[in-house]
Length: 116
Image 1: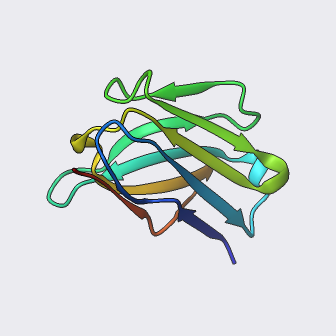
Image 2 (image 1 turned 180 degrees about the vertical axis):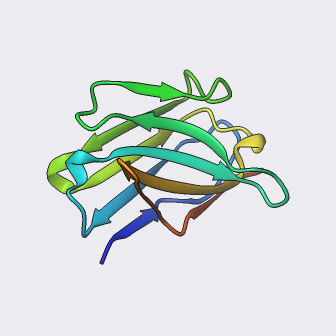
């Protein structure tokens, strides 16, 4: 059974940092491109960051470029999202997605709230 489990969300003040984790089970994780997306209620899901299978290439939404860093540890079947200089507009549920060919799996999300 395939599982993606996000963790690390919570309440943080503006300017603070959080590190999200996405732990995978039931797939050959190193074969999957992994992305983080986020969604605010009533809005469309936004792609935040993507990392290739080896971790050699990453891409970021303009809204987070320079503040967020995506990385992966294939030995631990885990992808991370380091989020620095957080802003209130970063408040959302953050989702992990792993895809390979036609297969795509999502986690259930972790809530990040940026507020003073």
